[in-house]
Length: 167
Image (tube, rainbow, N blue to C red; front, side, top):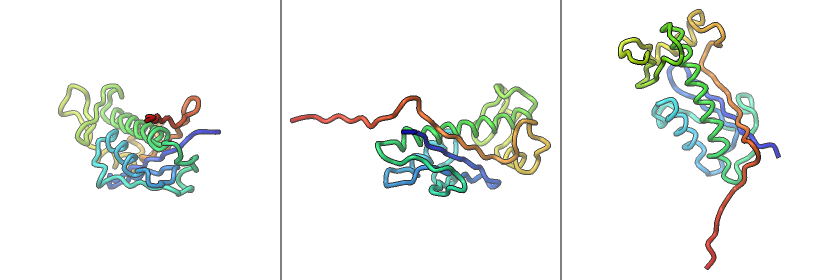
């Protein structure tokens, strides 16, 4: 059986975040898990800024299912890697704007800093404005807007593992 799940992350012009997931929640805490992963990677408050959307096949491909504890392992991995790719894209935009290597960029407190410099920075708000309204300021190989999709396919197969104590 094919084993994969997908996640799409979009940071809107107002800084709010939409996360589209391919798996349909069935009482296993999808929204909480997804919000916490994205909030941790992108350093944002996951209670107020992140909206998790599921079942919209116009925005995200279908997933496999929610059986066997797949939510945290497979869907969680798709969300994590999508968030990491989003952070990489934002660092690339910041590096281009600040005219430094992407390896010289740090993200903290909603600002992208040049390492070792507390003053050379671009705020997340300014970066979002640039991504949507100033495509002439983006790196040539970077698409406008802040939207990333990632499909996670584990190597091999994943199985539910459990242990039972016998009396």
